[in-house]
Every structure is written in C-alpha cells, then in structure tokens.
Length: 623
Image 1 (cartoon, helix red, strand yellow):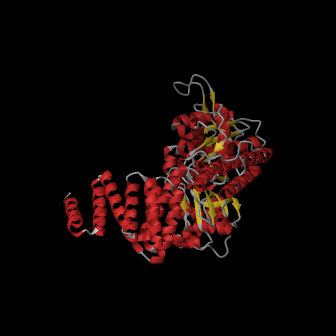
Image 2 (cartoon, rainbow, N blue to C red; image 1 turned 180 degrees about the horizontal axis):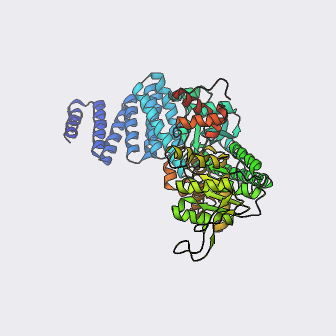
Image 3 (cartoon, one colour; image 1 turned 60 degrees about the vertical axis):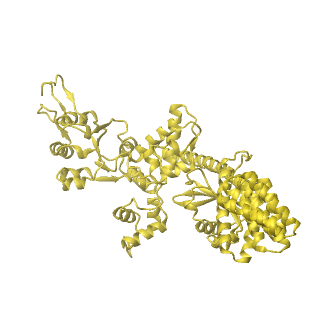
C-alpha cells in the first residue's frame, strides 16, 4: 500500500506541475502492476487502460507493447484468457514492427502459458514453438529455460487429457490394421507396437520401420521403464532427446499397454508436430491393441494346448501339458521304464507333479490293469506307517479286531507309490529295504511271510543325499530306490510352459465354475511368467483358480492376482538365481548359453553378464 501511495504522489506531480504524459503513463502501468499484486483486479485493469491510452496518444510503440504484454499476462492469470490472448497478440504485432525478436518471443511464450491454462494444448505448443525459435536466435538462456519448463508442463497436460478421454471410436480389427488406422488418422510417418516377453520386446505390428531401428528407438527412450504415456512435441528443442532426433524423428508418442506398463508399448512419430488428438487417439488405440494382442495370444495358446494335448494323449500322457525339452526327456525315460518292475525314485520340489509322473509310469505300463496305491509318508507316525504298509493279524494289538492286509498286498501286481519317502523312520526304511530285496512281507503279529509282486515308486521333495549326510536316511535304501532316477525341474525352469498351463487352468476352472473367463491380459501374464513359484504347478493352479473366481469380465487382469504376487516385480534379470543354480542349468544344457538362458527364462545377454560377474568360465570341451 505504501508503494501505491508513493506512485500516486508521483502521478499527481507529473500531471499538475511537469505535464509529462509519458511519465504519467509509466506511473499508471506501475499502478496497474501494484494493484495486480494486491489482488485489486478492477483497479489494475483501469490503470492498464489509462497507461495504454496515453502511450497510444504519444505513439510510444515499445512501451505500449510492453504494457499490452503485462495486461495480457495479468488477464490470463485471473481467468480472462481470451481477452488476455487478444492483448498478447497485439503486443506481439507491435514488437514485430519495431522489430524485437526477444520481446516477440516473450509475447509468444506468455501466449502459450495462457493457452495452457485454458486447456488449449495444441495452440499452446504452436505459440511455444514460435517463441522457442525466436529466443534461440537471441541466446537468452533464462527465457529458453522457461520455454523448456513450459514444454514439459504442456506435454504432461496432454498426457492427462489423453488418459481421461474416451470419445474416440476405434475399429474392431487385427493389430496390423489398427496400426494402419492410427497412422492414417494421425498422418504419421512411422509406427509400431511391441509386446514384452521374457524381459524383451517382440514386434507385433509395424508401419514403415524396420525392427532393428525400432529397437534402437526403444533403447534410446528407455521404453522398458515406461509407466505412463509420453509425448515429445518438438525434438528440435529437446537436448535430452537429441539422440532420438538424429534417428530422423521430429515428434513422437510412446504409450505403454495398460496401467502398469508391463505389457508392451505403442510408438508413433511424424515429421511435423503431433497434437492432442494424436496422443489421445494413440492412448485409446493402445488399450484396444493390448486387448487384441491378448485375444490373439489366447487363441494361439488354446490351439497350441490342443495340439500338445493331442500329441501327448497319443503318447499316453493326457494329463501332462508341456513343451519343455527337459520334460520331454523325462517322458521319453518313462516310455523306456514303464514295463519293468525296477524301483523308481522321483525327486523334485513340492508341486512339480511327482505323483503325475508316477501315475504315468503305472498306467502306461504292463501293470496298468492292476492297482495304483499311493501313500503319503509325511502324514503317518512310525507305528502307523508299518501298519499301513504291511498290515496286521487279528489280536496283534488292542485295536486289531480283524486281519488287515497292508498296502503291499493291496497293490499286488500293480504299483505302490511312496510319496515324501524321506519322512519314514530309519526302522521303517530298514523293513522296506528287506521287502524290496526279498519280495516278501510279514503282517504285524504274524510269522507267515507273504510273497508280493509290487513295483515301488518313491518320491521326495528334498534331496535324499542331504538326508543321508544328516543321518536321516539309509544309504543302502536310497541306492535300492534310485535304480531309475527322475529329477523333475521346478516351474521357474519351465517358463515356456507357464502360459500353456495358465490357459489350461483357466479353461478348466471356468468350466467347473460356469464362468466365461477367456484368458489373461498381457500385463497379468507377464507378472505370472516371471514369478518364482516356490509351490510350482500346484501353486500356479491355485492362483488361477482364485483369479477366475474374482474376475468379473472375460480377462484376468493384474488387480485380481494375489497381493504377494503383485508386490513382486516381474523378474527381468537373474538376481533371484544363485550362481550354483546357474551353473547347474548350464551343465544340464551341455554348457550352451543360449539353451541355458531359455531354460532360466532370461535373455542370453543377461546370463553372460552374470557369468562374467562371478568369473564362471565355459569349459572348452564340455562333455
């Protein structure tokens, strides 16, 4: 207020004594700025008008232009954008007549700011580009910094607007035709869509660009870490993206599929500036494109599932779903041993399908017409285990009210499956060893020996060699069981099977619950593909069953996945593998890095880096 009184005093002095109308006009402008700061909009507007009228009478073009600029900026700030733009454009015309490139640029910069406040992002970009060119010619660094800052704000505003919009009509078509539709509507130069698979991008549709150039652009734009759409309206003024401009790009749009950005990205560029409509259309089309790709993947997986199941059913494995080389090796081994009575030991983590393989051995072999008798050794105390295995004679103990045959007798001619055999006591192991060696059993409380013709298949979710070292398992019994040894790989080493298993479980669970869930989105699939699955196939089955129940539409999406799974980022590297696991997988794949990387579910380049870090060298002549 003191400042206003001071200015008022000077204005009266100029009017009454000096008669200096120019100084009076300058004082009015100063009053206007002071009133603007104090929030007195009406008085500010009146003072601006008085200053402009005096300067116009005096034909003071420079100061009139400056005053028009300040008035336009002020009106833009108080919500009178249209009036503000009119005054800013008049100021620019005056600066152009002077001429003054710097002040023309400032007028355009202020016009861009007002247009952004009004929500006119496209017009704001046009004004900003013009300002940027003029100010670059004057090398005014502070003004150029303002231009760069404003460009970032405009581009962010464009993204927000595009994410809210939903009025664009997108055709129901395949990915290639959807891309052509986008290119035509946006008058684009190039476009492509890629999907994230195994931590890398796979080209799904492209227009006027080769795959290697597309990959280079994605690398320069750090597309793998993208979570929200980005637009660059003019790369000529972006120092951070100069490497992209050298690829022949003027402006571009990059849109991730879905809210979490893990499905893939859509890219579009043009030699001229892209606008708000182009970005909004790209965002809308990306969502449709993601759904279309999910539908295509669903159809491909369904057809692949049918083909594999027919092939495996012909071989006698209707319940097994796999395309994993290791699993096919195991099935080939099953084919070789199925008709013999030789004991088989199946080792593998919980949920890998040990009983499934045991049943396959039984039902494919000559014993298939006889019983398959399973026993969960982990659920039985020592005394009860012997009773279950060998049976008892009436009166052998208090509750033995009648003769009871043991499982060996019940499985006669067939197969006895001892699941989690490592839980048996050393005493029970010794008795079982005798049965395996002699082929005879004795019921508890009975002296009579009974001949049994039983094939024993044992399974363990822990290493029996480790149990032997700890004194928990008999070494002689171990060697008797492992005449034929099968090691089932964990699901994390069968990552190619995960999409097939997911689709199978979706169809199975949907049919059981009479729901119409078709498949899974790319984002949700990518999360499940890279999860570690400590519970293996059983855990995956339970997860899909849960997701099907919670899904309200036709597609399983990330929100319906278990919280523990969603919290873990999809693995794009090997950090959760220790070096011993890596070396083991390399050895299993004859030290061929390409095959080992595929088995681990990661890019070969990542495997090479990890080996280098740990100093692991590939043998010159691997056996």
